[in-house]
Length: 148
Image: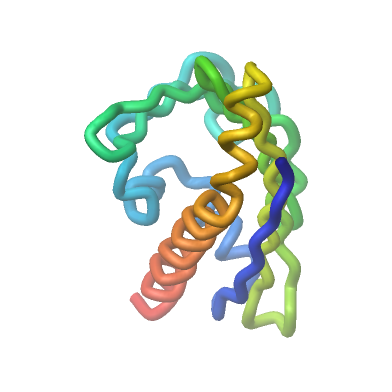
């Protein structure tokens, strides 16, 4: 299942990507993150792998993030793999006017079984809404950082 979200952030692109790539900032805009640990490579660089644990409802879900491509400040792509789901997220950051950034997040989400794939297709609207909430949290964090 593929979907995308888009948001405008009132912060210059170079600052947006710096905030986005800094692992110390993740908890600022991903409050459900329980832990993250580097498994291989330099965090945020191509080939690096990180174990991430997120709280989803009352359950903890472990995901392995593998950075696929980094073309800062324009693009960051990563692959997220769990026991039953994998997700390729391709983030594009476009300069609007030297002061603002358009962030486009393209997501391709797949499951290990046909039944799960059908279930995830039914949840498309919910997944897109969850992604937009994440993007909105990052926008709020980035804009608050700008004014500090």
